[in-house]
Image 1 (spheres, rainbow, N blue to C red):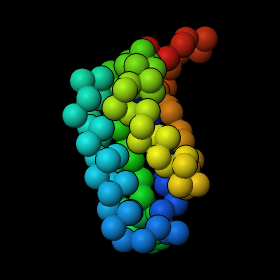
Image 2: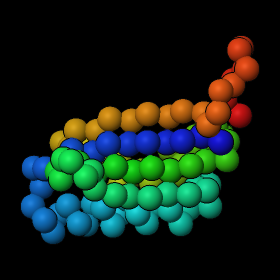
Image 3: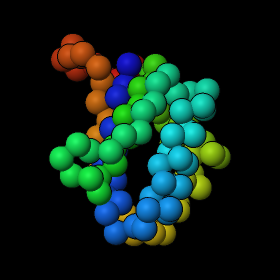
Length: 101
């Protein structure tokens, strides 16, 4: 299993635009390659929104990255200049020398 964790600094957006971005992100949970997805606001820093998603395999994550419904969301976020931090990790501790599955 692969965790895809993304931190978005949406503090510069007005409330309607922020809500729209969060809805767009949450809608990605319906994609067939996504095992689980949650979008939520940080408890201590209200301007930060997090996306937590789970993929069955690295191949599913790769398919998500180029999915025709994911790409426009990414492009819009980039176009708005939203600072983003991404982390992709394999669940559990893999044996030494193994690639993500």
